[in-house]
Amino acid sequence: MSIVRTYRRDEDGTLNFREAWFSQYEGEELGQFVVNHGTVGHQSKTETAKDVTEATAQGLLDAFSEQCTEDGFLPLTEADQHWVIVQYTLKSVEGTDRDKYLETTAKEALTGHLAWRGLGTVESSDYAPRKLNIRILSPEPKRAVSAVKTCLREAKLDFTKLTIATAPFDGLDNLKQAHPLPAKGTFSLS
Image (cartoon, rainbow, N blue to C red; front, side, top):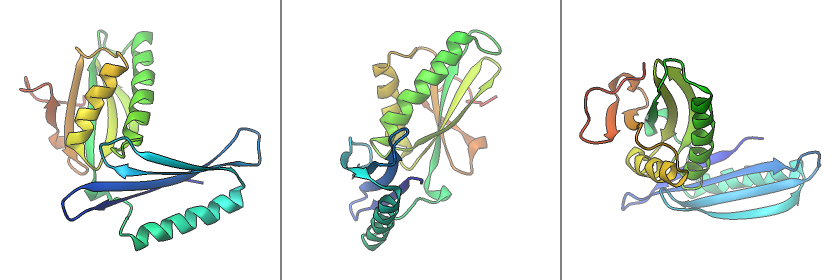
């Protein structure tokens, strides 16, 4: 069963989100149904129903989706999202075991930090010569950039080798550096 994630922009421009999912305990028939909601960019509020069967969870998920639609919350389209690219400069062309640890740790930290604030999802990561790229999709790229910096500082990950750029969903070839500023050259994924 997948996650249902929806958004609605209020008249004042504030973006709010609601999401729900079902997760089962390992080796158990029962699980928990989770509803998470809040203002994008701020720590969300979470409600959980425990000891739920998969069939009950499907009914809850359907009802949740229906209520979101009635309240004007809809899933985002690709055009509603932007890329936020977190790039680390590496000491070697291909990366080392230390860089693999950096990739895993950064992705884990960013996944949780961004998700609980409705700021997006970590989609993938890849290596280019002397670079590690972590790709994030976000409905609010400026807020996501700020959250990425906060998250990586709190995780005590090497901030001196960090560059962040943003682009519209269909414009990865037109990335604009967002950190550090002013930009010293052009940002490239390769």
